[in-house]
Image 1: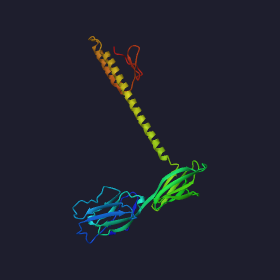
Image 2: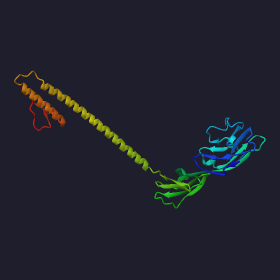
Image 3: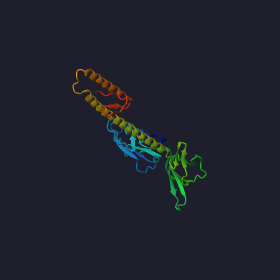
Image 4: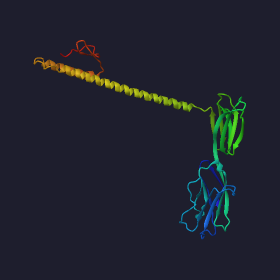
Length: 310
């Protein structure tokens, strides 16, 4: 049997613990192959176990299992006994034993492999705790990592505090550190190891939240301003259409009197042409028509009152 004596993996990744075996009777053996993977203590319940008949390479592989956290990676009929561990956790850091047995008359063959799980420093919590007496307050920082990180306390100017408080282990891969805390004081908890570092400020820095809030308000104001401009333009457009219709009605009523005498026909046509020309010019420039006392319309943009068509 051949195994990898030592394997290292980062937390959260998948890993294969390789294991392969050969046996003098493997080629002509048609019995059952029993496969088991144990943690360090071989008397514990196996992490994975399966059995497959070695009578045909084309038959189904009953050791193939659903995608569980621990499953077989390979085919025992080919001597492949590797263990696949999905989403490795720090608690998976241990020794694992690969075991195979051809039948009950043969003793099992087994070998162990070491799995080392590494994790960059991570700050799990940073909070203020009241002492039992209520007179003092402590700022507590809990970190996790493997190798175990070192905790350093910094001021808001990023200078290391003289009083680093005290630190104790809260688990195999966790530490808790506490320092005295004064109201409105700004402190930084930093965890560092050879794999990297992590830090967190207390109270939390809300500058990003404030910036996002300001940007959101500016965007909202721009949207409201755009909506106001659109409403204003539509209102002005409707008012201009109403004036145009009103003026067209007055022009038609003025230019369509009772049938004029033959002698005044030419003057009437000239007057109509004058109104048509005025109408074109008036719509090129903004204007406001004001009713005159004699019933004529006066263009307020003109300094000189136009003569009415009679």
